[in-house]
Amino acid sequence: MIYQRAPSDITETSLRGRILSGMAMATMATLFILETKAYFSKDIASTLSLASNSDIEQRIQLNFNITMMDLPCEYATVDIYSTIGFQKNVTKNVRKFPINEDGVLQQYEARNWHQDDVELWDPAVVETVDDLHSDGEDAISLNEDTFPYAKEEFPFLFVKFYTSNCPNCDDFAPTWEALGEIVTDTSMHLVDEFMEEKGMDTHHYSDEEYEQAVNVMAPVLVTRIDCGAHPAVCNEQRIRAYPTMRLFVDGKVAGDYDGHRTVMELVHWLGHMEANHREPGQLKMQNIMEYASERTLRSEEERKWNDALMSYRAPSPYFFNTTRHPGCQLVGHVMVDTAPGKFLIQAQSFGKTFAAHMTNVSHIVHHFSFGDIEAQDRVQNGGWKGITSKFIRSLHPLDGNVYVSGLHQAYHHHMSVVTTEFGDSHLSKWARDKVRRVYRILSNTQLSTYRTSVVPEAKFSYDLSPIGISYLEVSRNWYDYSTGLLAIIGGTFTVIGMLESSVALFCKRNRYYFS
Image (cartoon, rainbow, N blue to C red; front, side, top):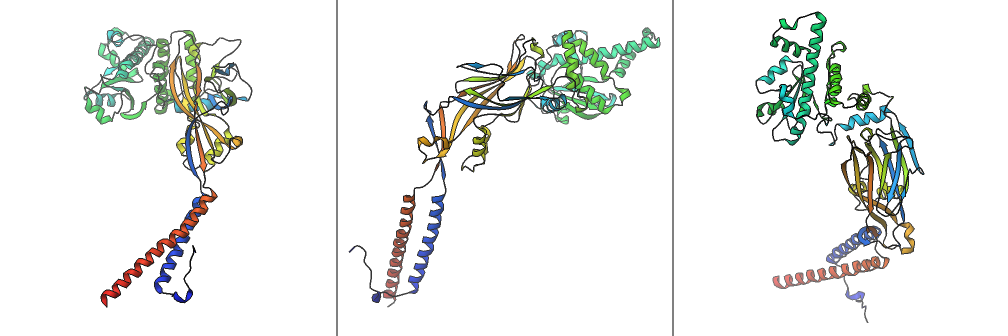
């Protein structure tokens, strides 16, 4: 007989038995709850696999929402190229929304100065520092003694803090000296005009008096301080990066310049700062702008372009001109081949030829992803265990980024696309429609420089990885759950029985010892 039972007349109820029985019931109840909870919960198991031809989609959906900041909708086109074929000027499922200058250029201005793609020197300044110093230094060198004097004597003081071992400072040096030369030449011209208008004889004034008059007419004093030679000044000013261009108004810090390091951009920023600190009748920077334009712009075409550029790209949002340089927001999706390819947004027109140096493909990526948007939302909001915010971000890593390019430049985005599937481990291959498939993007962005004759383009290159990742929901089988319950019951009785036997033996030995 396998299962035997003791007769009731030889069993007895004891306090120890009731305690152990309660412990057994509590233990079994606790383990039963934990086992049941584990049965109804699901774990995530990830696997890497080489996708077969039957699993790979021939075409996938590419979703985009991109604002071209300085490219009108009538010229903005979408092209798709791949190793299999190409699609030119795609219009199906692509919508274009014209963006006026106020909206686009406010974003352009607000974000541009915080990007790492600013021009580091002015290409229009072709002279070297030695050439510019041949007739004297116009960007005056200051030290510990002259710096406080300059702040006290000159209402507007523009200082470049630099070091001799800074490559960016060396590249920027001719541009800064050219700015000082332009300010000096403009001031001298204004003094000469004033003396001529008043009928004053220049021979009756000494060089010192003439220089003093030039300083009075100058709207700003352009200077420089070598932090390697005069570290005390830079430490006092808490200069942490070189070069740092800082403007002092009435001896106090008015702001640091972080924009494009070109003469026109510097002058334009100074004009904006002057408007904030001087009365309308005291503005002088307009004269500097005219001379800077003559000094740095090499053709009439560039001069017209600069006038239009300054009218909408002013540092202050109050100076935007709403009649020029509209942008375009392109929204939609296209079907692309799973072969390596590229998605292009570029300027094209049948009846026009574009000037390469006038084409600006700066853009804002609101959204860029592959695959079904609904599947992405389900994965993101489906409560999958182990799916981190970093993973969700990798589905659209370019979203929210701003890419502002300079002359003959454009940003190229290189992406490796990894197929990622979510499903149940018990699904059979014929139930593939229940698998949620999304695409992770490993991106790398580079600023590319074009030849002067080539029109820049916003390029998004992609390559679908042959290795796929599967995230499967793993749940326990019913027979595993049943086996676990039986093990809990049997194991609990066995352990409690062993414990009861040990306690009984211990009590028996104690009675024998004390008797």
